[in-house]
Image (cartoon, rainbow, N blue to C red; front, side):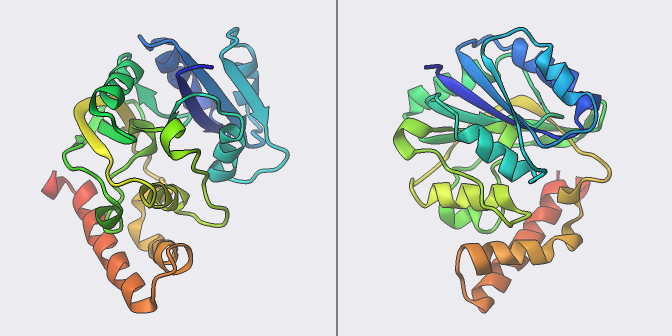
Length: 250
């Protein structure tokens, strides 16, 4: 059994996939399995993955286009590693990411940890200041803002189990982290920048006003909060989202 399971959804990702592959193979920590699920791509993504000659890579091709959360779940069903981490097909890790995160998890006896990450343009050049892992994360403070990014986080599946992504939510990553933090008391910060996140101009996650309803449903439908409580946390999330991405506050 590998120490780490890397979970990656792929959908028409050939433009950036080569750099993501490069960042995984450059890792100084090598005891990993890479579970990739293709979500019915129509470009060369599958071919690029199939050409990789490494027994640690396990490719699944989804029978339907079900979205990133569904693709991640298909990979999670096959994960055998103790530590679970995520890397989308357009993101990038520094070579020491896995080594540093695993060491930190063990040293701190952490069930969940997250690091800084650089916020870059499509060429991986810095766009705004790095996002800082500067606070412990709890269920309570994660309700107001999602400090956990998939590409810079890791959890211990031996201690907390596998946490799957919800079907039917466009904010599936936030719901998943909230469900995970119902099981544990705290996620710990590692204040080192070890990943690069591409901030695409057309990214849905950047269009905050277009996903207010989806965020409201995180609280109303998935957390089962009252209407008033759901509106309260949606307002907090919107304010914190502005502060997270605005150059004025970074």
